[in-house]
Length: 555
Image (tube, rainbow, N blue to C red; front, side, top):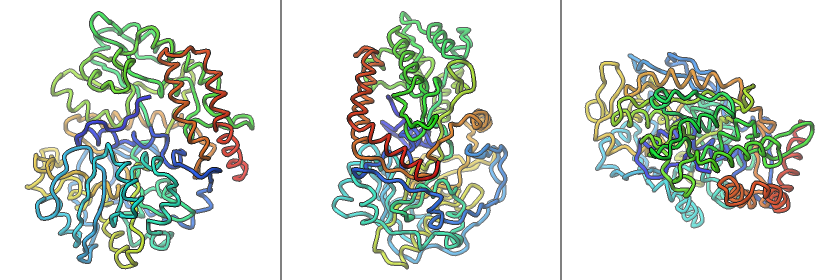
């Protein structure tokens, strides 16, 4: 299955993907979604029982949103705040040099002394932050290298989807990173007002070994996937936007025209599973009638698989997608070669903004969530963070607190002078304000900014106006709000899980076998064999572990 992870990269491409939580959620909910490599037996901890280690939540009401999101959908801003607030009164730094490491999917800019954006921020921080920017595509390799050598910077950003690639992460966290509990738990967080403004659900995922070990970068959207369609094309074809599985198939037949080089879909497996109400909690677990089962074992999954086999067999999926995992579905969709695409929600804004320059009529819209039978949909969603920021162990109380003040500055929300500086640089140097009041970055900002600060600390989630697509904020939040009531209830909500090693080991080989079935390389009848191999290979260990976690929590 294709994931909305950045491939080639420039800054805008990555931000359109990660900006709405697509990466974290699509990777299975990251840490709370059990991707972490575990000890043989796994571990589970109830977050509610760890509340004493979490920061006290104190929201900042600096500016009021123009469009209210229904939690966990973020609020929207269509107007830029006229009067910015100076949220930080004292310089957070004490003149220290602070080394950092963050990922980036693009050209790495120069550092302090050769970068006006970095220098301006460091001046306001009162510290010399020295960014260590690494290729996001090989970030896991770099993390394993530096952590294995115990050679880490003062501040380290780890994307949630990379955690699972680090062996025995809980042990590594304890050995390498500062325990932030005594700095940020409860009322101790209040002096860091911007950090105390971050959602508790984000902080609850930053706990390892029953201690607060990181600062989270909150997601600003709960939905991992959407089905987008080319409204400009479907209007001309008279195709009806689907509200059932049968209608989705009919849509595929109506828009596919191989003679003209047009096909209906890319790989839409994740959305088809959702449409057929396949469980998605913790990567596919559910508790039904006192029985814990994984998605592979459900009738819903079998029905979804049958549908997927059918659309691949009947030639409704672009042949480049069928033949290769590396097909550029975005390019095919933009070029009108695919009419409907499964992608991360964050892809919407950037693709619309870029493609309308090439094709003025380009109109990319999300399909409202629906169920296979036309009834109440089951929507997969998560509030888990995208990144986690760790502080090097052993720096001492004074420097650790200096770093937390720096992160607090970076986390300042929309409506503050600090946010404007981190997000847009210096007015007149990196941006100018348009007639609508919103900052518009110039080429220098694009050259000097690589989110080397932003990826260290996220802000309270917001959806911001973009003049390139004026209706985006309204369209996105209305679409997101409509689905909140249908978000799947997670029986393990509030339980932080680290899955047994056997279960973790068997997951990817099983997914590969299912992909072979979907794409016609194995018969559908092989599902029973695949299921038995999964159970024997570690699936039963996973079931026993998940059942015990519920039992121990009294659920």
